[in-house]
Length: 226
Image (cartoon, rainbow, N blue to C red):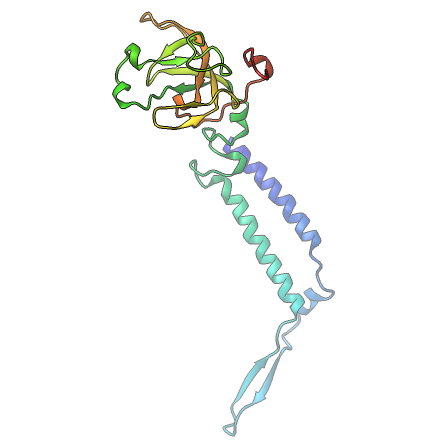
């Protein structure tokens, strides 16, 4: 893929250079004047010692402009050819690292894995009922409603998230962090007797840094927009 990308960049550069070359208006007779012997140096008699020094006439502005344009094209072309192969850790626009949330591949990606986060340090190593976090049936119903429960999860658990809504019930964790983001998640039943479930995890119960697509209307639970 890197070789193909480099070839595509080189082809695009060649097109840009040809277009830029066609836009440069070369003054009439420039190349003939360049090939002719220098006539812009005239001797000037110095002081009484008989020594002479040379005085050079300034170059025409047209020659200076053409030379500056040529240098700029060479520098830009060199950067374009080198940039795609700087190194695997370099982020360049749309060709960024696939782990970055800004790439197009991430926008079209499927489910991602979320890690549950409990801000209460005393509960981060315990899997007791007191330390369980609720996965709700709906992000549009009160989180504390006893009937709004799809399952339990604990700090460090991994859940599969398919999409996110950003207009759910406002939830505030024990540290005062609030969010209306809710992730549609599911967890398969584990071999150790753990039960699987599908539901909605409040955004404050994870520390996700990966872009997740917005849920479509069909993926939202009843109660949306009511």
